[in-house]
Length: 330
Figure 1 (cartoon, rainbow, N blue to C red):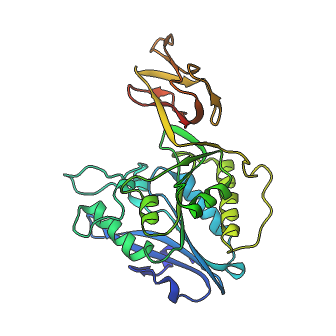
Figure 2 (figure 1 turned 135 degrees about the vertical axis):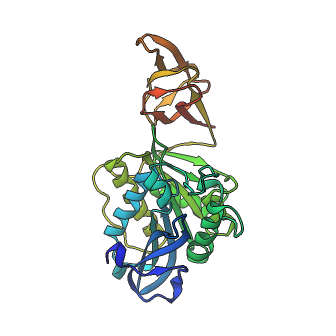
Figure 3 (figure 1 turned 30 degrees about the vertical axis):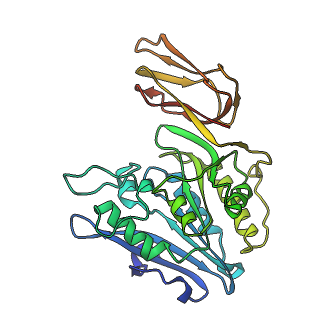
């Protein structure tokens, strides 16, 4: 069913749906011209009972590889072979997506943009972003999942590998993260207002999966993420095992750590990383070189700690304070 023809709902009553593939438009909030932000929702409900898995993407509007991952997973799912239910929300922040920006962009001229992933589960009488998330949490997400996966990427101008956050204190969350087979894995106790944290606080094991860079299409990273999500669904008992596409095999020993350190530009000018994603680096190793407006070397940057390269800038134009390299370490 085309998006424009899908029913508009303000509450997803998942357990009342029959077996099948269902599409909806969730009415999140009215905008400044009296129309509604409509969020796409796909439900794959199997004929056999089993876990309910919620996959969200696009919490940040410029993180499009997560949206592509959720959409491709939807194209590959068949409700007739599911033991349980999969809910896909591929585009949670249409305001940010249209603005090509990570934040929710309110139409209030006296308001700044908002990072949704610091405001969950929202507030009924809050600002427009908090009201949006309150409706989304109580009408669409809460009560409709036994497990959850939130898809992200790095923001514009930088890149992650396939990278998972999991709270190691929650065995089911750690098992999902390992089933994905990511390049890097971080022990993440959670921050207030983050969707992963809120799910875990409501006894729904959740992981955050980072799928490459922002505002660019990384087809191979998306394919690896989709293959990883299929492995999670199999691990949770929803599907039979399926062949992994060539080149999308899980990483058997991911780089793991509990902390990150970001090396930031101290000057303005073009900068080139001297390391690759996932690379192990030693204390003091050269990780980036920055150049002035004439193209002369202006600054060398070195690793302040040993670890693995978790993120690099792929936009060379860097002003003071912006990310050059991020390291994962213990």
